[in-house]
Length: 203
Image 1: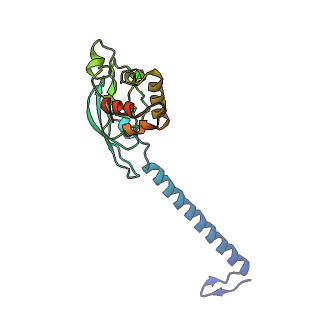
Image 2: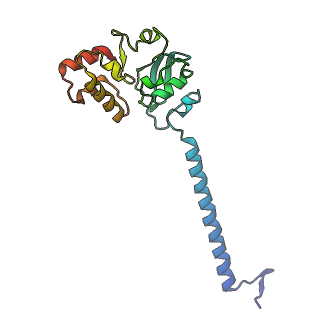
Image 3: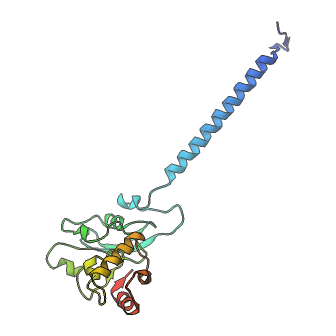
C-alpha cells in the first residue's frame, strides 16, 4: 500500500499520470470553449451591408470603407438626403426613405444596384404627371446613373435601345457605377456620346 507524506497519500506513478492527463484534457476543453466564444462575438458584431437601413436605423461599416450620401426622391414616403452604409443598394435607400408609396413603379428601376456617393435615386410614380415631375421621364431633367432605365437612357442623344440595354447590363454586371466615365468601357460609346451622357446623367 502507498504510504503518506504529511497526511497526503503517496500517489503511485499510474495515478499521477492519470491526474496529469485529466488536467491537460480540462485545459484543452477550456481553451476550445474560449475560442468558440470569441468567434461567436465576432459573428455578432458583423452586420450585412444595408441591414440597418432596412430596419430604418443608422448603419455602420466595420471595414472602414465610409458611408455614402444619397438623395432619394419620387414615389417614396419620406423623400430626402440620407447617409447610408457603404455597399448599400437602391432598395436600402428606398427603405430608409420610409419605403415605396402605393403608386410607385418599382420595376422601372434596378433595386439591386449599388449606391454611389452623391447619387440621386428617383422612384417613378404611376400617377398621371407624377413621373415627369420626379424627373423620371422629363427630357431635360438629369437622369440617375445608378437607377436609369433603358427607356430613360434611350432619350439621350446618340443612345439607341441597343446601347441603352448594353449600359444597363454593364451597370448590373459591375454592381453599379460610381461615375459616368465608366461608361466609356461600353462598346459603341464614342467621345460624342460620352459628352451627351455627361450632360444628361448624374452620379
